[in-house]
Length: 111
Image (cartoon, rainbow, N blue to C red):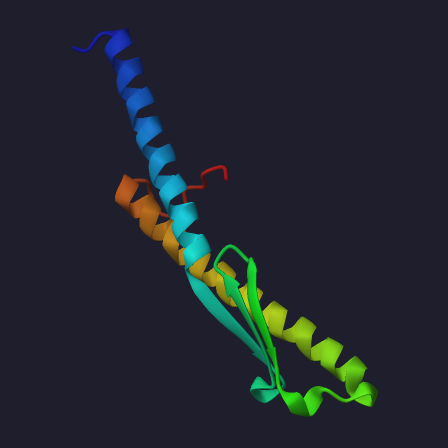
């Protein structure tokens, strides 16, 4: 039977491994990109899976002063679309990381 000290050391080592894997996953999420669209593709926003906006593309046809309120709405809609996709990708990657750690599905780790 293992001593208490050995069990504590094993638990600490496991916690360090989990923390390292979670840090790697968080770094990977910032490298994965998603694209949100609105207005039939007239407005596009690229984001990382962590939600960082990488780029915005606006079709020239929307660059009319009288269309400003519509453009603003389309930008917000494109960002929201990208955000939903980013959350989905992030959840998938975190689930993969948890499986690799041997944690049960649905187990919540603090981030």
